[in-house]
Image (cartoon, rainbow, N blue to C red; front, side):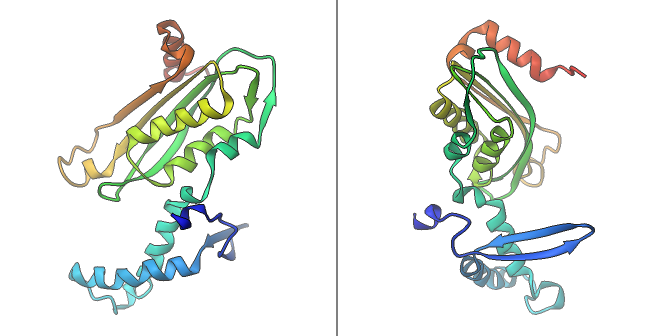
Length: 217
């Protein structure tokens, strides 16, 4: 779809607001915001609310802005994020980035799921700037998702872009579609995993799992 090909630098307004010593910057496509917001007045009415009451007057626009922010991953290219910081390096041991915060939206009910991702790769001639791995996670997470696909997309992006000797991804999340509705199990956690290359080896995979469950500090 064409809107997925636009970058965040195209057709966007930028509002800056000074709040407690930092600058809050909102980036959004106003035309897209207007289209999304136009539907929410009717939705509020169908829910039994009065869209004209004071507390709800700006709710359609607020929801539209929130949704655009929560799905801004459609406007990013995770493989380019990795390529922007690839460096030749003679290092072939495991690199682990763990406890990466994950916030995403379930595509079935459009309710949030959130938790942590743990990622490792074994370099094969190239390493990548460590901050780029959480950015890749965010790029895929900020879309309508299911956790299983999110796990595979992160794995495949790192494998295809860096061509390492192996990639490991484990994601642990709580899903509000389970805790707020449906079975209403508030304390359930969903864990997904995906591996390539050397991580198919039980010893290597075991080392990774030990590292992400241990507290080295």
